[in-house]
Amino acid sequence: MPIEPDRQWKMLIDGSWVTTSSTYEIIDPNTTKVVGHAPEATVADAEAAAAAARKALPAWRDSSVGERCALLGKLADLLEGRVGDWVDVVQAETGATINITETLQVGGPTVDRFRYYSTPRDVDVPIAPFSSAATTLGPAGLIGAMALRQPVGVVACITPYNFPLTNVAGKIAPALAMGNTCVIKPAPQDPLGILLLGEAITEAGFPPGVVNIITGSGPEAPATLVDSKDVNMISFTGSTPIGAKIYENGAKTMKRLLMELGGKGALIMTDDADVGQATGAIASVWGFHSGQICTAPTRVLCHRSLYDQTVEGLTAVAEMLKVGDALERDTLVGPVITEMHRDKVEAFIQSGVDDGATLLAGGQRPDLPGYLIAPTLLADCTPDMHVVREEAFGPVVVVLPFDEDDEAVALANDSDYGLFSYVYSGNTSRAYKIAQQLESGNVALNSVQPHMEAPFGGFKMSGIGRDRGVWGLEAYSEVQAISWLA
Ligand code: NAD
View 1 (cartoon, rainbow, N blue to C red):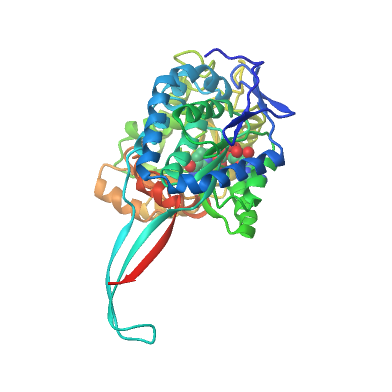
View 2 (view 1 turned 90 degrees about the horizontal axis):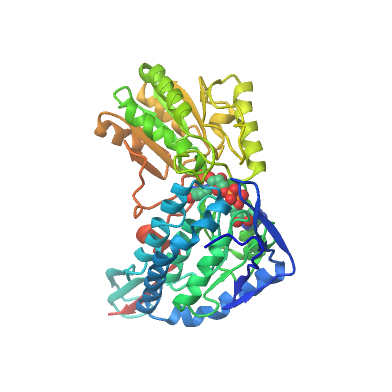
């Protein structure tokens, strides 16, 4: 589908496509040109979307799981046939390289998430009978019980810019399967693909109001959803400071929360690690959507005996990766999302240099169009540095040496974050032992590939709750106990 900068995009509320009195520009990070104008939702629009989801809830909640899953399956089929049409729009608004756009922005994972939740799964738990003595409440006897999973209600899904479709699919697929209704508020920078998804949702036959989509550039519309009494749960993926704000504001209405927040992934290389394998994994920080990945292994903790070899290898790789036009097939490092974000990452790198880190690669703005940042490597870092403690959400790797495994564990855990960590070791038993000591929701051994059906989420400031696989169904449900006299 060719990009039409003048197209009038509309929001989906209660099954209708609605216009707004004002719009804002969507900028292509690769060309820095305007590629669209997205609707600017008002507070009233956010309230209308929440009210529509509330109105649609009883019928959707009472539909059978088979009916809901069938619609999710139909949506997966529709998307499979359509994703090719969306590449141009999604590439232009995200600035992702064409390869990443085709395979990961509009391809596989988005469809996979709808497909996974299109299979009904039993998440209810029978409980062994309880032998009750005679009490003032009744005679002696066996009490039977079930722990049932009931939908939470209306779920507001507030998502970040890095993988708009995958992030939204990962929320609404399990939420809808469980019988919840949704309001989606995608990130301001790249909401157009989500509006296309709304067209497919309508075409698949989801009833009006079951999925609503509002877009906007500011915090007012999503903050309205957080305050709304019509909304039972906020499923948020984004930065830790905004997550904390939602946590605080959601308390007034006792919101259920799923929080997928920031990360500063540690990658530990023990003295027997395969340096080549680990180097390839670390380079994914640069080559995978320019480091705009919450789970990226950006904080390398390297055994001192491998330090020089690792740092030399990483410097060589950083200099080899092609930085530039996201539309050229051999480009590995495309732009970051906005000019403001590029400036922020550049300031982040400069703070590392000012604090005494050694800049071995990057640090110069590429003299090319687009919000580009060259793959950056900061060595000789120390645990107190800002670049070691905070996430850049850009193509920046920091390296620190260690001598003993215990020291590596302590360094890895010396972080406010705890989302995804990695252990590279020639001995998987040793790696497994280290993994168990890490304060991290996920740990991968000798790999940076996640298991997409394993529980996902963070310790500490990286979030609250887990999703993916059956944990996704649990995340979007309340536990209800029903008991009876057997
Ligand atoms: P962000 O926090 O700036 O924005 C996320 C969303 O929050 C947007 O939709 C935005 O409109 C909304 N928002 C802004 N103010 C709000 C308010 N007051 N109330 C409610 N919602 C509000 O995040 P971003 O820059 O889009 O994404 C980058 C961040 O997301 C990084 O910190 C990254 O680590 C994190 N992230 C985490 C995961 C994960 O799974 N843990 C995945 C992807 C990204």
